[in-house]
Length: 239
Image (tube, one colour):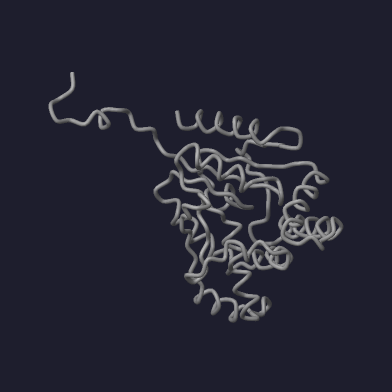
């Protein structure tokens, strides 16, 4: 029996919120899956890769010497990053010092430098601190390289994405070709191989699969099948 004046909503069981991390190799569709999961679950999506790309953009604009620790530290003090929801695109977009740089950070020149920037200890500490603050209230989906191993090692659901190398190259080429028809598939292949090597061999927070992460190889499954599987995993953890 309902009490008089008591909204029915308050009597419904409230599902607990969890943290979902999605790590993996470049061009495996991490961001796509993360956005879809966040939308289906009503969670906040945080693109950690966009954060490193935005930092890279700032460094390039200001000619920051990556080999000079003091210069890097000083530059980081001048960087403010935030995600603002865009109702038109239905996505959260990254702002660098109040400037929307969501599309600027997708250029190949940024892709060629971001792994080097992300390998710097001070840069990772700066980004990780901000990411952990974003996850304090849970109910987030975050993708990247070290989210399940370093940023949120106690996350309830960790997914590690992988795919056949040739398929990854083709996916990345199609994505970049729309913005730059002059790009070649060989350039994309070389860039991916370089990023894979740097990401997995860097001294600080190298890319690796967490022991408790569920592997998702999407080489031969559709985006719909992929989302369905991830939602099943999430549902199990939430229950």
